[in-house]
Length: 252
DNA sequence: AAGCCCGTCAACCGCCCGACT
DNA sequence: AAGTCGGGCGGTTGACGGGCT
Image (tube, rainbow, N blue to C red):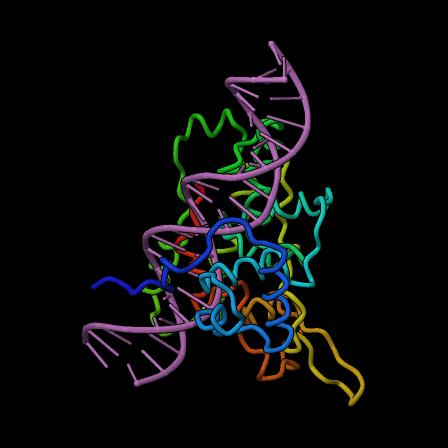
């Protein structure tokens, strides 16, 4: 049984948005807020598909968007994040305030790909082109490590493991293969209240990086014993909750 | 001036996933 | 458990503009 279409295609406009349509959409969202994109076009008096409205708002009309050229720092950050996350544009965009997944995806395909190729790096694998040509396809699989771990102790979750999770091992492997890329885990989760514990009514103490990743019991945890319950097992990049299925992270 | 090529980027499409019933 | 729905994501398309011949 197929899905019903998201809107009545016969009576919707397609293609470039007009100024008037933009104004209507902005005015409606300012008055009523985001949400319920399906019913928004009718309520806002737009002959557009709800999805189209959402895209237009998120990628173009949102007031917090940072338009304009990407800085060199942003370039390098995108490259590093892509080497870790692959084509997870929304996750990458989450680390670049004011940038959208669509914008980054386009920028990658039009600028960064070429930039990496000029450097002699395969943009898909982040390895030297000569090396990529030899090894046609290499899959970095988290699944094997995860499966063997599961078999060892199916009741043990990540935070109670004495050994580092596969994520770390894979990153190390990538660093060895791409000495020119610094993939040291400097990427941090966005600011979260749960990264801090209250020491005084007005003071807060930062949790260590291990705890932020959900590795409270790791050897390197430096804030053992002073971690609040609410900080237990932060879901970095959605690895725990499965928002980001690490088994699908392949470097082809 | 006209035609062609190519790069850029806004927008669309199809699929997936979680929530809900 | 299965179906439906809304929202989100990644891949792809196509319009447009600039440069070149």
